[in-house]
Each structure stands twice: as C-alpha cells, then as structure tokens.
Length: 338
Image 1 (cartoon, helix red, strand yellow):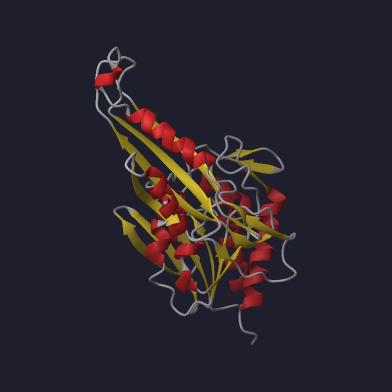
Image 2: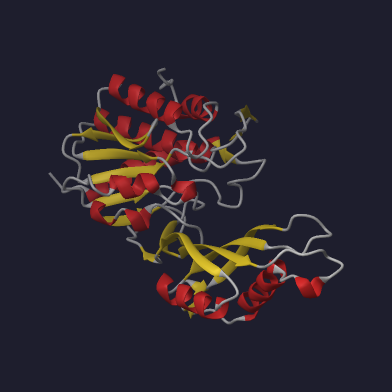
C-alpha cells in the first residue's frame, strides 16, 4: 500500500485510518516504508519483534535524523476532517508528526539537501522496545529531532518514567471469619496509602516527582478474604529512578513484591534559538532516553499533549503545514554548512 503524497493533510488522513495500536504496527510500518522507498529514499525495515519493525530512511549518510513513533494508544479512531483540523487517533500523537516529517524530508531533498534521515519506531507507548533496538543502528548521526506534541515549543527537559507492579499475597478464607484469612487487599491499600503520603524529590527545572496508580486488580468475591492484589503504578521522575525504586521497596517491605516494568531517566535537551513558540518542560515519557547513540536530542512538535490519548484527539491543519517548514529548517540549521 502506497500512502498519498499529494499534501500533508491527505497523508495524515491515510495514516490515521490504518489502525496501529502498540504491538499491531506492522501495517502502518509497511505503508510508510513502501511509500518512502517509492519516493526514492533508502529504507531499512529493522525488526523489533514478529510482524513489527522500525522504519529507517536515509538521504545520503545522515548526520541529522527526524524521528517519532508509529504506535498509538487504543481505541482506534478513524480520521475526521473538521474544516480547520483533522481529528482521529494519532492526529497529534504521533501520525501528524510523521506526516510533517515526511514532507519536510521531501522538501529538503527537493532542495538538494543530503545527509539526513527519518526514524519511525514501534512501541513508544509501552516501554520503547522499538527505540531500544534502534539505538544499535545510529550510523554517524549527530542530532536527533524527536517529535511529540509540545504545542510548537522546544522542550528543554523532560521527566523520567518508572513503571512498577506491586503485588501483595494473602490467604483466602470465608469472609464471615476474617481471623482465618489474610487480606491481600488491605496490605496493598496500606502500601498505596504510604506511597501517596510520602514526600518525593523535586527539581528546580523539572518540578515535582508525581505518582499515578493506574491499575488495580484484586479479589475473588465479596464473601472471600482476598488472597492476592495487584497495582500498577507509574512515577514521573526528576531524579535517578533507582532512588525512587529503593524508597518504594523500603516502604513495601514484606507487604508486597515490587517488579520494574519499564524505566527511563530524566532528560535535558538541545534547544536551537529562533525556532518554535518558546520553550517547555515536558512531563510525559518519550523514546529519547533509549536513543543516546543517535547524538544530541531535541524534542519538538505541533499539537498538544492534552489532546493526545483523548476521544477528541486532533491537530490543526495550519500547524501541520507550518511544522513541515520548521522541521526542514531545523535540519538545515544542524547540518554542516557547505
């Protein structure tokens, strides 16, 4: 399947209409790879897991690479043209950014610019497995311009992520005789209370460490003392993740086991003066911590993180078109002068 390259809006609409939730990125990856090959780029499909691959495209021997992710959160939402904007899953996170970067690449090549590339990865929404694989193939790349919806502002820094599973064990018994059982739910609730009441680190640039209790699973029936209970917790970190992990394990003690699901460290980013609409510190996770071999990182994109992952996710058409020019100009500014 070849995607339309008539204009960025048509490309974005076609991208949105290909479902690509995490672990199911194969179809959109193949469409992007085939389209870039047809447009004359050297393309590599870098296997990450069965049926899933990163797309690496090159014009010459890249020194600067534009990058973002192909996966989206569920559920799939088809594209809607609402006049001044395109709505649908991935509109700003991150298929609109893919469309803008592809058209920036076409613009640069039409101008005769060489030595830049594109990197579109799988798995960003679930721990960055695509980025971790991509980090083994940077070539001689010196700068990577990663795209996330930052309201057209250059990010100066970003929080890290520590995602944990907390699991408590107990002993089942008839609920009428609680003294014969051992409630895993009560153990877990007490631990979660202690985590919420604890003071976590702060940073003058990144701000406060925050914690979200995202998933709770526990119990069998109302008349059974629960023998197991599980919580998934995600910290947005401003200090090394090992410090937070040590504190959680100390608080957990014998009440629960603590398993690390994913982690990335806080980041500080390159800023190029004169581009975008100011600067921002981002709280959300990105692929950047896993791409250290690709050179100095930047983070910039149209759209708002507050619209990402929502039922009304959208990007303004004017911002999409402007992003094409900004990405192209950023690449030119980072390449060596002829």
